[in-house]
Image (cartoon, rainbow over all chains, first blue to last red; front, side, top):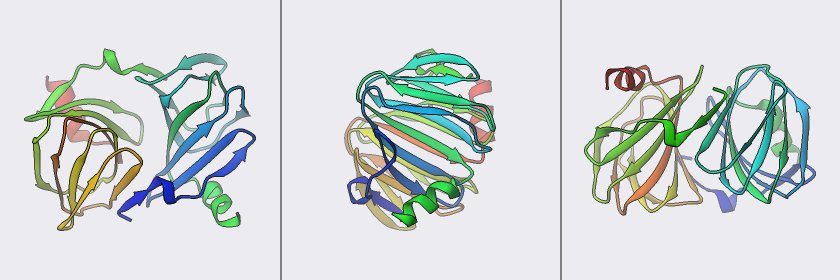
Length: 112
Length: 112
């Protein structure tokens, strides 16, 4: 910190097809993801607020039962504790931002 | 919410050459910026933690007196209350993420 080169952050395959680079700040976690077409994240929820953007490709998020396809230029906000799942429609790049820090992801980074 | 089309958010020229599209969630503010080459943001600070990324072009942030040029693939973290300023080296697109919400920016959005 304060400047981080993403290429220096080791990717972690957190779920099959989801290659994650995490940056943890004092209050937020940023997850820069490269996702393989067809890769699925099962339904889950967490107390952290989440904002998702797609920088390349197309992804489908289902939030509280409502499927939404999105690509560059769209933003999805997932409030605290709302169930969501996802599938990559194409190979894609995502950025997920969380508040507060995802301590579970930090533990994952430190384990690997 | 939960899905927002950025093209439906009216840009605000918050500083000369800084065209901002704000998204305010419960705990975060995202500022999608289009910046004109040469446009300057004077030194300032705020209690909000800030994370900045560049999605297109090149930008120079000076954080606590240290200048850092960055483009896609780099992330800059500005801790709470640390002084920073900036200049666009080229026309560029930035994303600034803040926690907590920038109520000052929300007021700006509502005023215009």
